[in-house]
Image (cartoon, rainbow, N blue to C red; front, side, top):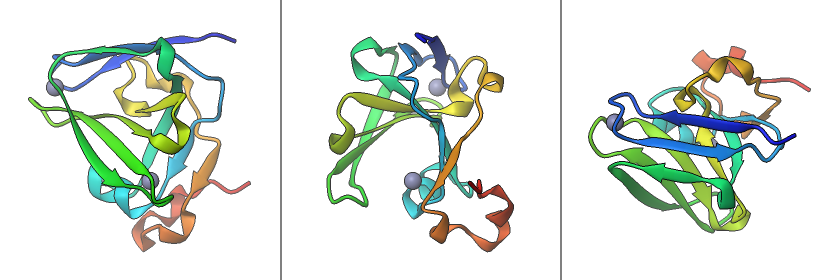
Length: 129
Ligand SMILES: [Zn+2]
Ligand SMILES: [Zn+2]
């Protein structure tokens, strides 16, 4: 199923579109996601890199992910909204933050990653199999 999705940032200057890979939306509780989002976890939807286009003042922050490979976080340099995440380990896809989608309501996270790093005040957010 090819599902074309669009989204953007809070101020509206960054806009993107792309096609969902069909892979699962996931919820990540790792420390990187906590610090980058300022919340307990990040909910991410995978889009295919080749279908993905983005316009506006996107800035990219590079860090070393848990796999030891470079990971990139894209955000709006005007309003600071987190937009997308990409890693060299999974180079055929880009993960967009679910809440940045124009219509996030259709998506359901299907699994939790790094649930061992969850904060005590966010434990209810863990998705159990
Ligand atoms: Zn913005
Ligand atoms: Zn994470």
